[in-house]
Image 1: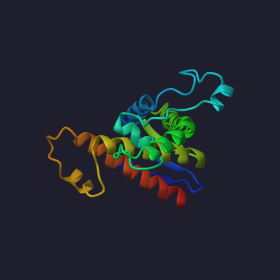
Image 2: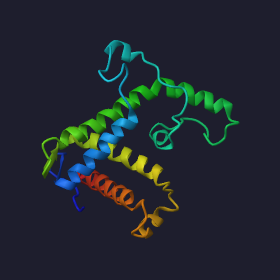
Image 3: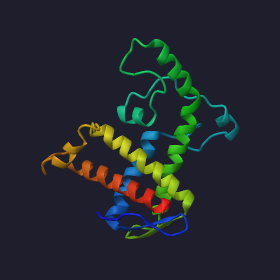
Image 4: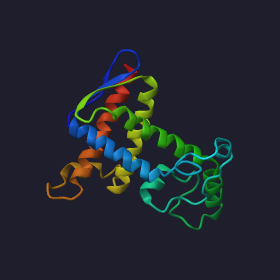
Length: 191
């Protein structure tokens, strides 16, 4: 997988993908949508006015990868004795998480929609607004994969040294490719 973004010169970017790359991106984004969950009111979005006043959860997600997407705003979640920080984080989460989930869902959907019609590969051209959605979606993929792989800043080098038989190898390749895509997209839109 060597596909990287290139600038289109108008604030947008283009990416040539083959069939396998399209399938990998689409699969990971669909899985991201499953992790994020449906919007307020269920699958159909429900009442738009009610969604404006929807309150989110007050507890952090139990899944560490989802918690990485929706982290606590205050304190250290590893310190259960910090009740004041936990309460403040719960209040913050209650009012912000629904919008954050909506944005992350829209970012993932933007990638999926951009890939529609590219089953055999091809050139994906993105305008400036779509580039920002892709940046968010790629970042979310890296956060989730990094959490699943238990990547730390000190240990990222260990990813390059995994033996071929390691079950994590395919996820590591995807993690590194998504990082390269993210970096190349950022460079393409800032040229």
